[in-house]
Length: 459
Image (cartoon, rainbow, N blue to C red):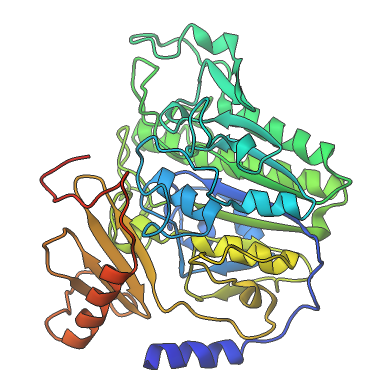
């Protein structure tokens, strides 16, 4: 109760900055892949150069208590698109389960409001010929990867445009061929940058929603080159002379190259005179990985938190978030408002004056962005994870409760006093444990595709 009272007082004391926001701002949502809380300069990184995103933070707001939809890709993106946490979402794991026709998406809401909608990059919520492909779920245009495993390859021999495959002949000779180590040719993130620029130009005269879903810095798990380096990138500049492991040079280079690509997109907005009426949000789908030879400790990629991708501690699910909206979001501000991916849908609905689905788990954080009105607070945030068994977690004020297996005891941490989640305080706080246990039971519905499994059974 004390935590919630403190939060409410902080919200009421928040300064008013903006006038009523424009009714139909353009929206660009940029989603990185496996980028950790600590991988950006504006979130504490000291080795990897991210000048564009650092400036974006200075020009806007950083959200320091922002959480991904899950600790792995597909369910996290499902939470973002549908406004439901993993206790209610249709996709709760990385199995190839498509969105259904009945699963409303935020892109469909944009379409209803008269927006042009485009997705560039990684989807992961519907395979070829399924009901879940982007052009059936609210996107006018799509260019990128449908399959999340296919997205592990930075040099694919095809991508999808709409529902059809678009060959990339220059990559076909090397994609998926063991022992081939010739110089890479067509780097998919470069194609995504150019496709996004085309989308902005084509839709400069109408309101638009661009979901720019890059694959950086996910590891290349397909290992299409003989050396099997964790991330393929055309050059490891500007880190070529660093005495770092090759995998770490490549990781840093992919992030800095992504940062530069975002700079190109922002420059295009200014060129098209769209910058002042465009809301830009940047975040990541989950915490950093330990794949392809990368060590997340090398760059302190999890920031001040413990755990990485596939962890329900904050290192796996708390992610960097930057929001820039000229003349609406006050520059250089920071908010510790507790929010998550499933809040994006109702926030968009609030901006557009539309209604989100009645069954959303999200809460609009528009008052936090504008400094106007009273910001509602979550009673709790919920996650469940299905790889290697079944685990759950909730964020309850400053408390974090984790149930690592169906029959395991609940572990309890104070996320403010103990951000590394090292000291289990369950025994000293039985009332909090009892409340958390009740929420863990009530916060989910059963799922045929993602049933509760004991830890010994692997999915």
